[in-house]
Amino acid sequence: MPDTDFNPAEASTWLARGRRPAHAEALAKAWRDFPDLPPTAPVADRQARSRERVIATRPVFEEMRLEAEAERHATNFAFTENEVREGKANERDVAILNGRDRHGYDWDVANRYADGWYAAHVGWPHHYPDGIPCNAPLEIRRAAYDQGFTDGGGDRTDLFDAARRANLALHRQSNRPAPMVPTAPARPLPSSWSKPSDEARPARWSRRLAILSDADLADGDPARAKWDFLRIVRDRHGAEAATILILTDGGFAHAADYAPNASQGRRRQVTGDVLRQQLVQALARREIDDVLVALQDEDLRLLDGIASALPLCRTMERTRNTKLQQRTHLRTWLDRGYGDDENMAAGHIRWGKLIQGLVGKLGEFTVRHVGPAPVRGQLIRVEVDDGQLATGYADANGTPIAAEIVVSSKAKLRSEMAATLRRFGAATKMMAAINREAA
Image (cartoon, one colour):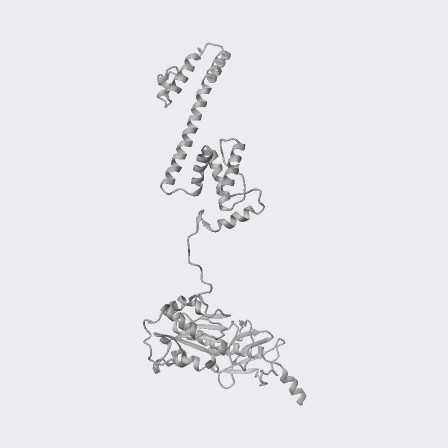
């Protein structure tokens, strides 16, 4: 339904539609000066009249457009200023205001200035953002970007400018000085160490370190004897040459100096720097290649706090999980030790499970679980690459090494097979030549 109250020749009509008084009066005057011709007038005349009215109102609409643009710029600047006052603005917002205040840019050009400034400040290369819509001419936009790039520290004449700015930006977070944060530890903490395995390289007892807890010692209680970690270590041949430390309420003590019932095994009385100094003194002038930590829970956290006092060496492991698994891990670690008068081959043992039984390989040697021994126990056999029995091998002392070995139980198969492989890997085949010469 047509609007019968619409009279474009009246200023009130345009005022009712949101126009300002000056614009309303100018529009109304253009309609009064160039009113519509009656429908009976020739089409060419009516079209000519419409063109005349458009030409008359064009300055008014252009002025309205400019005022709308100015209002948009002012509104955006006001919003940004408020964000800065409330501490919500970022560095690019500040750069927009700097472009306006220092160089007189409007909103669109100030944004291109901020693009250049931010790119230089964070270490990005110079690159015009021409794809971003902007009402300003291309030359003005690029000039503003160049000015911002220069104000942000960029130098397009310097070949190494981008690398220099990128290095500087690494020291900033969100374009502000990076806060001081604790540095990562120089070595892994004991709590992150892996469990012992037969894959690690064997080490001489004299260069091995084990840290035990007094909570894992029987202290004369027969019911706990099989769970006494110190007894398990001492029962292993050659382990007396290793460095064994025990964590007690009074700090670290060498196994030789440990007295049962000397500590309560509860809350540790010595911690922090004092405990660290004790560990440093206990390890002074000792060369360590292999470390085992048999601590759990709070004891392990105490050791994490003084981890820098531990030697950084080739193999670092810890026991974990249940008590049964911890004991198994301890025995696995003990299996890799050997005396100063012994040789054990290093390298990764490759394990496989065939239908006939467990198989391990190291170098040219293969050890197989044959099955039950003739009398009792389990029989394992060592072969060379061609499948022949590995006979004629001897250790460093010239003692022959048997190629067929009886293991007391299946539970000890893997550890005994690993030790046998390492003995053969370090052996020589001189005995075969000696036997032929004797014959």
